[in-house]
Length: 130
Image (cartoon, rainbow, N blue to C red):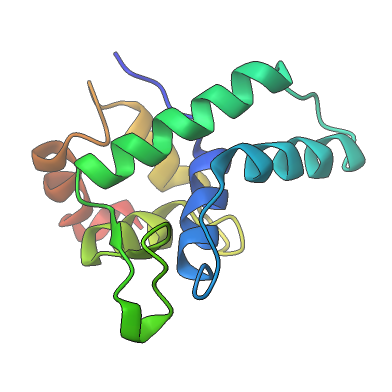
């Protein structure tokens, strides 16, 4: 069973959304994420591992159709992204600013691989997940 760091994925999806005009840089986003966790008094993972994980997630999100290269007319640099409809759906499920996001994360965690395209699309299509 594959487990994911949903907080880190959420951070990466938000950064992809806001990357117009500048490069998407997962390693610094992981550092910022760890610093915010530490400031909030939360335990942080090994920073090097978190940076590596962020890079792996970038590749996974791109390959599985959650993000795609940002068009030049939307501030694309060739090194940044936009959310696809699947990515926007994932973000809406795991967004920590939305009350009750724990249940969708729990449902995703119960899947063999929640970010597998077929698995995610099936889970996301169920109204009761949110």
